[in-house]
Amino acid sequence: MASLFDTRRYLTDFDSVRIGHVLTDTLVIGSGVAGARAAIEAAQYGLVTLLTKSDFEESCTSYAQGGIAVAIGADDSPTLHYQDTMRVGCGLNRPDAVNLLVTEAPRRIEELIGWGLEPDRVDGALSLGREGGHSVNRIIHAGGDHTGRDLTRTLKRRVQDTPEIRVFEHCFLVDFITLDGLCVGAVAFHERHGHQLIWAGQTVIASGGCGRIWRETTNPPVATGDGIAAAFRAGATLRDMEMMQFHPTTLYVAGAGRTLISEAVRGEGAYLVDRTGDRFMENYHPDGELAPRDIVSRAIHDCLLTTQSNCVYLDVRHMSGFRERFPQIASLCADFDIDVTRDLIPVRPSAHYLIGGVEVELDGSTSVEGLFCCGEAAGTGVHGANRIASNSLLEGLVFGKLAGETAGRKAAEMSNAAPIRRVVNTNPHSTRTALDLPDIRNSLRSVMWRNVGIVRREEHLRETCDILDFWAHYTLDKVFDDVPGWETQNELTVARLIAASALERSESIGVHCRGDADERKQTPPCRVVVTRDENGTHPKCVELRTETSSDTGGDD
Ligand SMILES: Cc1cc2nc3c(=O)[nH]c(=O)nc-3n(C[C@H](O)[C@H](O)[C@H](O)COP(=O)(O)OP(=O)(O)OC[C@H]3O[C@@H](n4cnc5c(N)ncnc54)[C@H](O)[C@@H]3O)c2cc1C
Image (tube, rainbow, N blue to C red; front, side, top):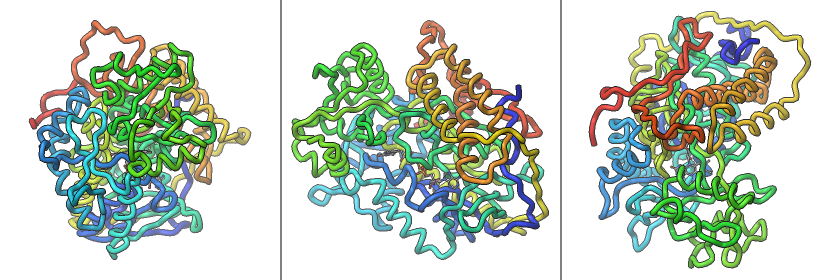
């Protein structure tokens, strides 16, 4: 049986003499915080084309509630922010990346305010919230719990005010084009114009994560891992793919989706209680409800098993001013007849944030020349084995800027921005029966939730790899001509890489919990990487690489 890793180099057929061409200096994939920030920076050096597969606003960024971490309080410092980030990341973080993140943070926030973001204030001073793992209040927020919406509006305005940036909405990245190992742009599919070849001097992936491959997730439908899967097909090295963060508290009401109930709610005093009304977090961690996310998620997972329940509850009834501080959450609860002043809010964990992704250097460069990556799609190593709350919007701002700057500058230095030549790809077409794609995608979500969820075991991970290989056998040999088909192929690819990486890491660390780990075994700090062979067709390996001091080099 063909393995998933025999995935084709390109998902689609194309011939450059038959489809439309677009030329640009820098191509950016994604309109979330990382893509928008990268585009704004790259535009200082030349023409930028930004693709996004839905409306500009449709991204994880837009749904962010809690806020952005930044060390600006009187009792705070970048050193403290650094220490909290490293502690929560279990020390597996890349120190120089963390250092960059926390020291750049105040400048990036100041810049946003200059561009029109209006964070919430108390008596004129920035209002700083608290979230799990942070030792002080350092989370700025906007519109109460509408931080993502306000951030997106600010960045969109800035993008629209930058004439060097062209935005193509409803334009889907299918694959990156490589010629002799160099990325020269992408083949994309536009809702109205069909296939397009976008020739770019440099290309930046900012296509976000892949939460949609789990049954329970906070992520919107766009988060299907397309950019990561396409980078893998183009030969890029991936890292930390087993590190998926599960958010402890999403609303558990049939029909509500799995809408996030921000950690800031616990930060401001909400309790977690079981079905009998008992607060249980104190049994798991001295910080109780404010323990790091992985600990709270596992505690809830444990509580659900021991109390044989489907959910636990957030108790906010004692909190005054809840509706003013969290208008979005209060209104959502009201839509389902939950009165936050009288009722408990039913919650359970969901897949939330992919820590791993395309392995990058600090400037966003990947192992493929001409290809950069930033934001949630990137594996910078900045989060280690567990992301501390509200560091990801910040990551998008800091590393998006760096990736955009390096890509833009490199594109400007190229004498001839894009080496145009004829490129053709023709895949063999399968004669098998048509597929019920929604059924495959639902089955994928179920198996990932059941077997590659909060607690993992070797036998379940092996079973998952076999199941995914079986489905891949008759799904990846198809040539689709629409977005759902390509998304399904990308989801299967990314899920298989996650399951294989989770199998490779037999220890429990941070968000990766192996129920069958031998706790006596001491594993040296390492990362799981996925690489492909020289032809870019088969995986060379999924392997554990021990961190050397140069990998994790630098100090705080
Ligand atoms: C509900 C929720 C709440 C959160 N709250 C917070 C918070 O308070 N603070 C915090 O720091 N983090 C929070 N996070 C995490 C944070 O929002 C994300 O990690 C961050 O926004 C990722 O930014 P990004 O730019 O990398 O990706 P995204 O914002 O997800 O953007 C990805 C973009 O790529 C586009 N795209 C994807 N595939 C393709 C394709 N094939 N072709 C073209 N375009 C494509 C998408 O349409 C989208 O525009 C939250 C996440 C969620 C889901």
